[in-house]
Length: 83
Image (cartoon, rainbow, N blue to C red; front, side):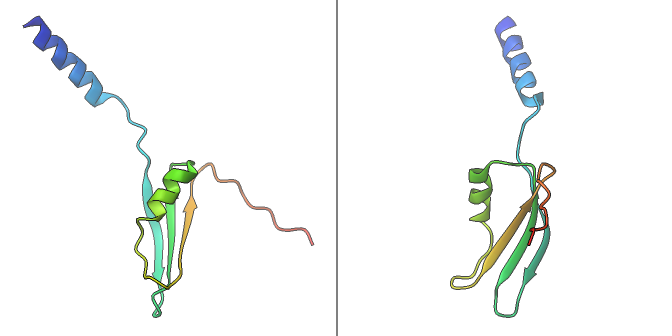
C-alpha cells in the first residue's frame, strides 16, 4: 500500500510540474491568387532549429514562395541602415 501511495504522489508531482513547452501562435496569414504565402508567427522559442522545424510544417505550394516571419519578446529591434 505504501508503494502504491508513493507511486501516486510521484505521478501527481510529475503531472503538475511546469513544462517549458514552446508556443507557436499564428498572428497573420496571407495567400495571393498565385498561391504565394506569408506567415507571421509569435513564438516563445529562440532555438533556430526548433523554429526551422516548425517552419517546415507550414502549408506551401511547390514552386511558389512561402515566407514565415517569427517574432518573440526577446527579438532585437532592427536599426535603420546608415547610408
